[in-house]
Length: 256
Length: 310
Image 1 (tube, chains in turn orange, purple):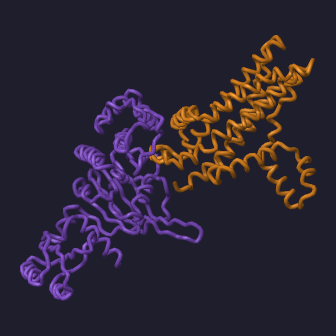
Image 2 (tube, each protein chain N blue to C red):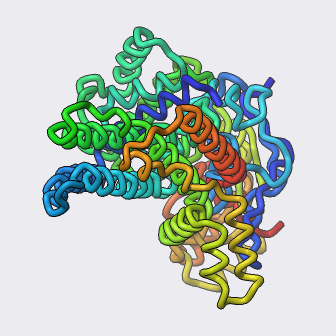
């Protein structure tokens, strides 16, 4: 992979994504949700800050996943379908440059959107807390890393499967990755053991998505150690690299 | 070293139980500085060959080399420019901006890019449309823009996949003129085409591919002169008796490829007068007598027919 070429493709990907209507629809809805959390919190006297943080961070997490899936789902298959990939791959670039460029460009845009929402949340919280709540930022950072893992999964499955299947598999893995092993055991106690074991095996291979959700600590104003944040970011990025390398292998062998 | 060389290049597509041999041991050499016409009917393997050269598909076996480098590598691709059959670009972009994008992918500095963009858009006659969005371009303009884009890296070799396909006669002429301009600059050009007159006019060498195999390859002039002394009489003959009589004398008597009413009779120069006399006596109608087997189109059909019989 060549950094210059990858970043050039990434910047073009941002430009391409900025033209997608879905981005603005989701951005509008997510901005609305964070703003609305302040109004909803008026029904919970004395716990307004908690409700605003809880609702908003949940919303930011949800919209992060929606941004990621909607922007990355047809990033590569769309270019193959419209054949805009032909003149591009005829340039002196590798397929890895292309794949990483698409991924980084999209994820950069998703991350910017998430931090715009974080900024909005900090503004919404200011009248209640009377200080700028920077504790929101690490929570949003981890949401962004979580979105990167989901994004890498979307890229990988979109190279192999149809759009509906890609969405289904990614969401299934995201949900299974977020469940505890005990809970999976409980959920699958009625089904054949082989299926339960298979789901547990998948769970073992998946990242522990619950690591990336520090909402409860933030909501209750508990301090999250910087070491934990750093380790979780690195843990997430490791998964991103591993999934993207698998995507590279699949894409490298594909006839276009 | 050849600009393009393929050694026993084969490509097999598999879909379930279906197997399609798109290329079968294709051997091809294109010298540096030549304009090579790659012709063949639909499904012959032209696009598959080109896609393999670009690295869009991988060969099942054999080798494809560009300037001695394996096809599809960054090093090989840095020396080529490519234009696909139908132009597929980000149509929301202005012509100039897309050229900047492709130029920056090649690592060309902004200053150099500006210079080259001006030059290339000039070559294809689109300089005044530099700030126009590609979605506003006509098909012909898009193909010319595609050539400007293929030239952005100052390539030594241009690979054009049916560059005039789907264009109206004006668009075809414009693209042909651009290719001729590039030919005069000494760029090696490899292009596939259905238009044989185009190949005849532009190319130094040509190869005819059919069912994934190269049937014949050589200088265009050699194709046109290979049957010197041969004449073809195009005529309308209703009498089966006369046809039988001519079959006994002529080298070949066959129906015209395009018009079944017309019979094509091939004979050598020394038999031409007796043949024409026989046709007139048998109340046949002579439409035309041409030297050689006809035009490149007819040669093409003959080669393909030979290939079918193999």
